[in-house]
Image 1 (tube, rainbow, N blue to C red):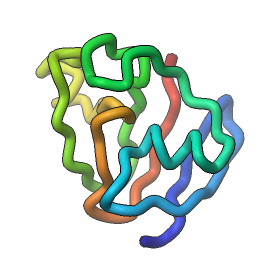
Image 2: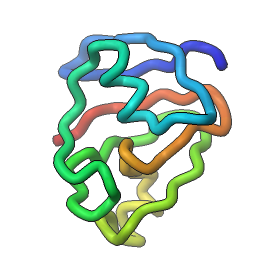
Image 3: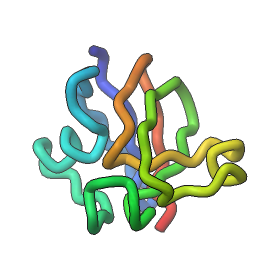
Image 4: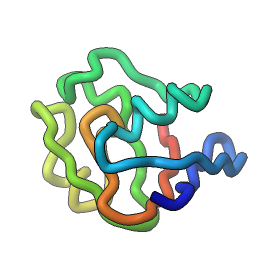
Length: 90
């Protein structure tokens, strides 16, 4: 899959994602320090804003319906379906 953009404190970082691994797993593999705790979709600590693209998210309640409508996702339980751009918000 193409490189994806991750914006952290206004710094743009690009890294390749694949459909087999979560955004969080791949970011950590490439040395990108995203916030996280449970890695299971419960805590919501890895919440990021999906600025562009589409993902498949299978969470365990760590994000509200309102946040999902506002295009927030949990990086620990989201896999990309298309090239994406995310912004770290917490």
